[in-house]
Amino acid sequence: MDNTDPSMDGQYRSIDEIDRLGVPVPTHLGHLKAGDDPVAAYGRIREKLQATIQSRDDDKLSGHEGAVWYVTTAKMERVLFKCKPESVEAIHWKGGINKAAVMATCWNLLETEDVPDYGKLERLLLEEYSQAEIDAFREHIDACIAFVGEELSFRECVLEAYHGIGIKLNEDKASVMRMLSSRFPRALMKKVFTLISRYGNV
Image 1: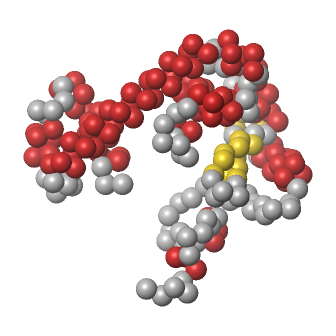
Image 2: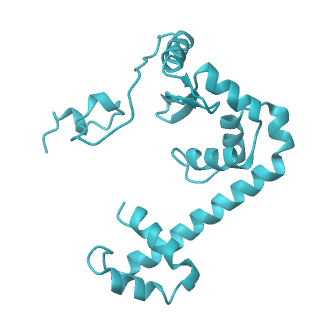
């Protein structure tokens, strides 16, 4: 192995620093280093996003809904922050907290965490909702966390069974699904197939 290859040095790299091999990627809006002014940069990005927003005849908006900041800490951990244009942020605040928003945030949290945790989920929700709104919705938030946890457990169970078969889905789908049908209820087999297709070879 050539140790001079910069792509093999174990460092985090932004999207525009690697060979993407033609794979579509999110738009890269910037790169901040230690010492840069994050508040000023946040404001500039919000203005850039707001410039893409247009009001439609059906009272909806079109354009870029927002951006996500991936912040690397001194311990090489990743923390995510949302950056929304002013008009989009106003709609989110007006609507108040709801189950769909909590569920989406739970799944987003799993980009950096193995399991959903209330404290970390609360920190993400505070970017868009008040503490009072979150506290009032606590029972439903706990239910969302429990649901996502159950979904993760089921996924792990499916993948464990799939890998235990020793046959790839793309090699013999019929045999794989026939073997798994003895492990899972018929009503769940479509879900089992979806999970294997999405995560089985990751």
